[in-house]
Length: 399
Image (tube, rainbow, N blue to C red):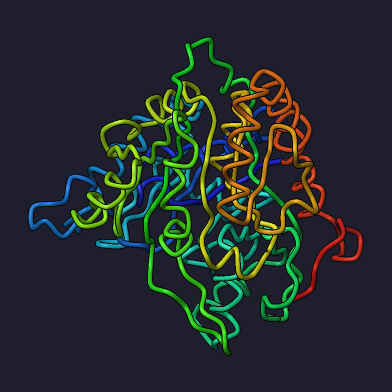
């Protein structure tokens, strides 16, 4: 089939986000599909160097388009991308005639994270799938009456979510949310590099404000991380490192940075250690394992979300010790993937990994092979997205 994938690679030119979206493109091509990446989300592009005014806002999309032009050949898509910059409605990449021909003849549109900005240009595509990668927060936006977002999702005839176990307290939205997860091109994550003796993770401290819905509050990772501040002293001599950004990709506040280091955390700047696709992969594959928290909203809502980053650790044969968001009911846990809810549990899981390291490394890769292989994940996605009726697709959760 001719498939169009859209995401936020140009808007957020970061190594980790590039892997997140590009593995859809590369994975679908591996399955034999005719794949194009078309970024048309209407979102203002970022300047990761801060921009001339220090506000991370750019005046045009040239640098962001240049980033795509440089990175897409890395995934076999040198001449198969287009980017629309909302600032001046300028298209980059594919020539206009070729882009129009691709849109006119596409069989399937897959929008990852963000809906398209010009939905009328895509309505003739028979199958249009939206993938919610931020469960709980997506459903709350709809339940609270964000009508522009609801209208944008109405342009799609299939809706998927990384929330594989959506259930109360996640609010109902009237959509049929079909479970899906991050596809990982496994061949990209085999690395012979020596392992650094440190548990790591890459994270945003607080991506956006807390959200209140009914009587509950749904926060970001900072809320959860504060519960585990004393972890380094509890697992010494194991070293724990976070590559952490603040809001809008800026550095962590000095007060936060100094407190984390006072508590024994190694803190590094992701813009220095894992900014591009290769350094991001090297950072993960050279780590001993991952330890990380989830967004507080995922912990409260328990949607069954699992991190695209953690999936890459697993594919690299690196165990993950991660906060449970309900995914333990859809993924095997205990070997390779270890979950925790409390500080004591986090301590026990880290000790388990260090005590049976080779066992957990083998198990991690086995989980990746079985549950995150792009061939399997994307084949199921294609089947569900192109089924003639909703009832013929994979089991789903209506919320």
